[in-house]
Each structure stands twice: as C-alpha cells, then as structure tokens.
Image 1 (cartoon, helix red, strand yellow):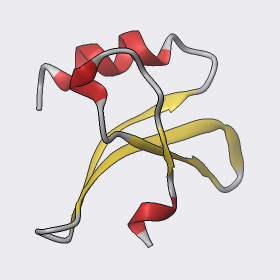
Image 2 (cartoon, helix red, strand yellow):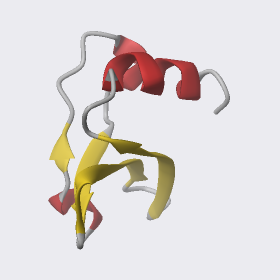
Image 3 (cartoon, one colour):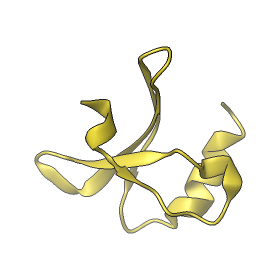
Length: 65
C-alpha cells in the first residue's frame, strides 16, 4: 500500500509527490519516499529524524537523485 503515506506539503516543487511514513518502534524517525504508480515502484529518498529541518535536508538529497 505505497499510497498510504502522507503527502508532504513542502514549498519546493522539486519535492512534489514526496510522501512520508513513521517507522514502527522509532516514532521520531520518518521514511520519505516517492511512488511511481505507472511503474509500480517505490523509491526511498531518505530516513530522517523528525526534529531536523526536513525540507532543507530533502532538498540536499534530491540533488543526488
């Protein structure tokens, strides 16, 4: 069920479509991922602690994708 994750509401268009889910047993950590419904693949973008500046961290990560 890859679409069960919550869509992120970041300002940067480069992060559109990004979703997040918490990790069981690690409530402060989040998995950020993209889902391509046509190809039926999930791309894990990052696993981050929720106290970080998430948009800044993910913007740095998205330049590597």
